[in-house]
Amino acid sequence: MPCTSDCDDAAAAPVRAAILLPAGRSRVWQERAALALDGLPGVQCRIVRVRAAPREHDAQWRRWAAAHPELQELRVDDESDAAAPADAADARDAAGVWDVVIDLADVADPAPWRARSRFGVWQPLDAQGLHLAAPYAGHASIVSGRGGELTLVRDGATALETMRYYADPDYPRALGRAYLGLLYLLAAGLLELVHGGEPAAAAFVAQAPRSRWRRVAAGLRGRWRSQLRRWRGQWLSESWMIGVVDAPIEQTLQGRFAERIRWLGGRDALQYRADPFGLPGEDRLLYCETYDYRDGIGRLERLRLDADGAVAQADPAGPQRPGHVSYPYVFEHAGRTYAIPETAQRRCCELYEIDAHGRWRFVATLLDDVAAADASLFAWEGRFWLAYTDLSWGAFDNLCLSYADDLRGPWRRHARHPVKLDHRSSRPAGTPFVHDGALYRPAQDCTGGYGQAVALNRVRLCTPQRYREEVVTHCRPDPRGRNPHGLHTVSAWGARTLVDGKRYVFNLHELGRKLRRRYGAAAQTVGV
Image (cartoon, rainbow, N blue to C red; front, side, top):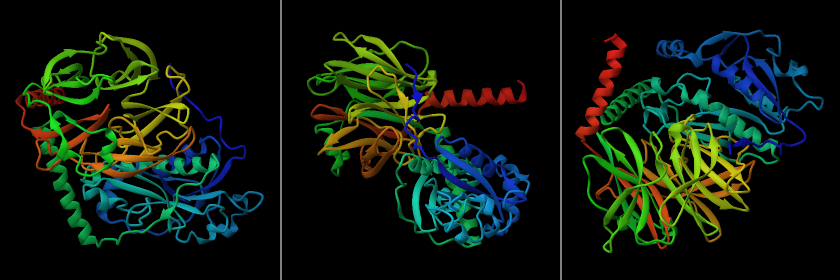
């Protein structure tokens, strides 16, 4: 059954927001964000034109801005409130106070607006305190290789919401991601007010800004990091391997977990295995993805281990559908065994029941027309929840939620979509579990690339309208072990835990496929 949106619980009185935009000349991203917020359920917006803070734009920034669609300048009418806030009497409600003022213009002095806002003046700032409208916003964090970072800051001192996104360290290549993600940041804060809460607050401490020459040097280092990543992607391949830890999943909360992994088998030049999930009640049967280097397609297998814990038998499993299939999320409910394989390539998320003979029977479509990656189901406070990454938002930097009262549906989308944007702890990475009354959710840490480690999040709040979680620890690969370059699944298997680890290898089969694809694309470009 397809997933629907649920906005029935919006507050009776709408949240009134003043959106400050530049007078005279504005940029595409500013106008687009204001229009999108105006359509947010439970929010009434008023665009107010103001004088933005003067900025010096050097030649390099002007070249980048001219080439980027989101930074194109637009001429706008100055008819709303382009003078001073004190003269903007018609830009206020009857009580003379807005619920919130959102400054997308980077006004020179936001203080006069604070007196007219119950929840202060909100501004999108980077880690160095630069407004998103300023040249080189986000530059320092992007070129460092850690990804981009943008924080919604109240009155210049309080961090309300933060988004962190994977970014190419070559700054011009990553320039547009912050503008596209800005709507998430603003909507997250506004929807907290709509549903009767307040955004989480923490002190905002900006890093020291860099001088021009230090920025130039950091930019060159970022280009070098970017080139190294491209070379690695062109010439090396990921080789994943399944492992077992003889301890329950709760012990992932303790340190030195990776040193206890017992890896199953060796490397294969034709394929690798990843995404392991054990069959409930069985200590030798598990499901996994088997990826074929020759065609780049993943398929599901059922593995049987022998008495020594080695793979004794491997059989095809799961739905026999065209395209890539992976992440066979296996779980038990009401005495029955179910699985949710990842079929994001087909833009659907399906539920199957596995019988005693290992046959898979289709039960229901949980999500339709959604490219849901690594969907992981858990039960919490009387509801079923489905956590996944929506590939239309990004490959691994967003967390989305849907919920239902019945396993078969109907499934409803969370009021916030996505509920989180953070490439360090969003994409699901195994079985959510409860320990000492608290819910924990494993997620991938993709700070510098896909599947580097597993972040364990403690869920603080999970309702149809609101969601909060925080990272409490990490499961990182053993740098001296057989798979030192990644770890991206931890799944519960009774008194044991299944994991997978990664090493970068040189694989001729995948290299040949990459070269053929690259040659084919080049041939099409020149008309061969």
